[in-house]
Amino acid sequence: MSILVTGGAGYIGTHACVVLLEKGYDVIVVDNLVNAKSEALSRVEKITGQSVTFYQQDIRDKEGLNGIFERHAIDSVMHFAGLKAVGESVEKPLKYYQNNVTGSIVLFEVMKQHAVKKIVFSSSATVYGPDNESPLKEDMPLSAINPYGQSKLMIERILKDLTNSEEGWHIALLRYFNPVGAHSSGLIGEDPKDNPNNLMPYITQVAIGKQSRLNVYGDDYYTPDGTGQRDYIHVMDLVEGHLRALEKIEDIQGAEAYNLGTGKPYSVLEMIDAFEKTNDVSVPYEITDRRAGDLATVYADPTKAEQELGFQTQKSLNDMVKDAWKFQHKNPKGL
Image 1: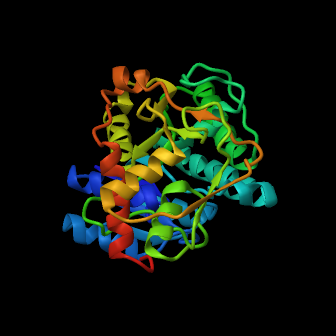
Image 2: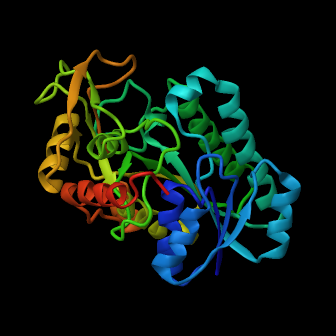
Image 3: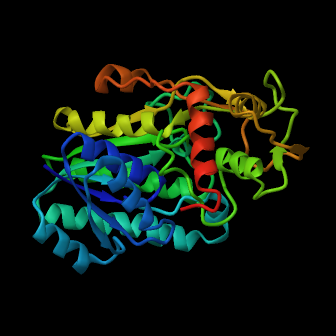
């Protein structure tokens, strides 16, 4: 069975390719390499002993995408492709809407043309907005406060409208919380091209000496230690959630949303402490002012994914920080 993986050379996409290949799927990757490197796919081959079929192409190229669907008998799509830096999205909103939303529409049009109606979509917990209290549940009101989050919410709504317009679509909307960690081999992991936007790669870069210190944004939140709490999920657990969604996709009528998180929040200081103790390294940090828009605590209610997809996380916090450091230590300059 052939699965098209858009954005398959990226952080989460490469880990998804590993589990798909290990389960016996044929994997076709489309990635424009704007935020990824083809070397990551070579590492996937080294881990699995199998190769993917790779097309360096933008999903907004409808003619090129159509050619891929003509050449391959694609059964389902995992859609990871998209820009994901919140700060950049505020500065360059049109870039994010053009890439994320327009690109997705082109993909869905080509899927419809070729009668491929099964898709697992990489969404985000940002669609819950700032007004819902954690634990966040799939039936809560949705909103977004930045163009990145808006783009994910728009795509969700487009997919739901698509299922309302015609029968036969099977769509899983997977709302991620905070992916961290790496494959246990240390061969693939989170490899930001510029300064990291997320906590864990910032911690690992400070530990390896690429950054002088970590900025901790605020220590006066109403949390046990005053720093913000988030629901961190190991990337291998996250992609296992995608595999479960793919295996259950025929049972999903229309579009259904699922949280992918652990249901347990950890604070910034807890993450730093776990990283230092597990890996026996130091992470210098400085407390700075809060960032505008940051919330005190955000975490998932994972019950729906557990009940309907049979998904439960397996990796511990120690696994998360150990695997993140192993990737950084083995690849001090990135891939």
